[in-house]
Structures are given as structure tokens and as C-alpha cells.
Length: 248
Image 1 (cartoon, one colour):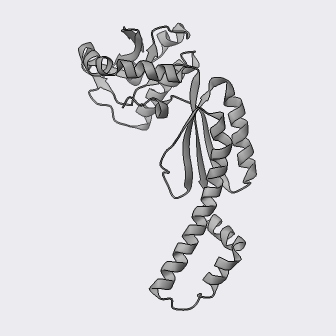
Image 2: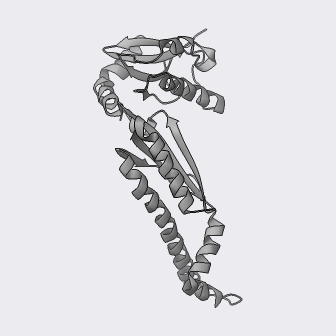
């Protein structure tokens, strides 16, 4: 039993990749990936075996695998759709996706042509950074030490806490600005997303030329070497361009 259609992404009408890869590719619930053209655009889809797909690791990875496999097979100019997008029939696809958004989709595909998304996430160890900051900031360390073992008033606690927090923010910003200054010129567009934990200090996506990824990776490695034993960097050099393909 099927529950309509599960949608993965949009391609230009002119498909320049390896069609044999799409013909053997499986999507969610091991359903074959198929294509359908609408007014000069091509939709990647499969039969939906569920009315609603839970955002489990298995399903999320399955969705991503379809998009990334297509891109690896040469379908580089791809507009990804969000996970879990199921529709009842083709009339719904046309009425709710292609009619209202086809001009936007064409514009986004034009922007993305020849470019890829990469992402950089930076993590540090807050406690270690705090200790190192105190070793380097003698004035602040002395101010903290003079109150050790004493009962501090609320004003003093707040003042000292704000001073330490400000120094840590400056320390973090110095690292982040170094990454911005080195990596931004290599991209045509950048998006900085929210950090997701106390240890994460930077979470950014970059839209770069397919031909410059190797150079971009070298810059990331160089930045890592600038901060030895201080940072953990997660560099994703291949992903569907979600950050730069927002329909709204």
C-alpha cells in the first residue's frame, strides 16, 4: 500500500549526470527513485509507503543518501527539498509546489549552478579555555584571586562574572573572526547558523565553486594548525545545499 509520493529534490530539465545511477538508486523504504518533469524542471521522488516519516537517523540518512548519490553521479545542480515531504498526488505537487514556486526554484537553480555547499563547525573546551585565559590575563586572574576565601557581595560577584564572560567572548570572537576572514573570500555566500551547544563556537555554511573545494579544505587545515590542541573542527565538504536553497 502506498501513501502518495515522497519528494527529495528538484533538478533542471537537462539532466547531465549518470542516468544509470538514478535508475538503480533506492530511497526511503527501499523504493526506487524516479523522475518526473514539470514545466522544464525535474522532480526526484519515490512512492511513499508511510503517510508520515519520523525523523529517525535511518530515515534522515536515507533522504540525504538519495541527494548526495545523485550529486556524486553528476547531478550537481540540485535543489534539495526538506525531509519528510509527502504529497497525495501529482495534482497536489503542481498546485502547491510548482505553480507557486517555479520561478523561485529556477532562480535558485541558476544561483547554485557550478557551486556546492560546505560547512565548518568549531568546538572548544570551555573549561580549558577559561583556565588558559586566566593564565594569560594576569589582571583578571589577580582580581579573581583576591576574593578567594572571602564572602563576596552580590555586586562583586556580578562584576567579576561579567568581566570573565566578556574576556571569554573576546577570546571566542578572535577565533571566529580568523575563520571568517580566511574562509569568506573563498565563497560567494556565507550563512552563520546558531551554535548548538556550549562547546560549539562557530557553525557556518559556505557556497563555493566545485573547483575550489580542495583549496578551501587547505585553508581549513591551516586554520586548525593556527590553534593547536585548542579546537575540534568538523568540516563537511559534501552536502546538499540546504542553507542556500530556501524557497521562502
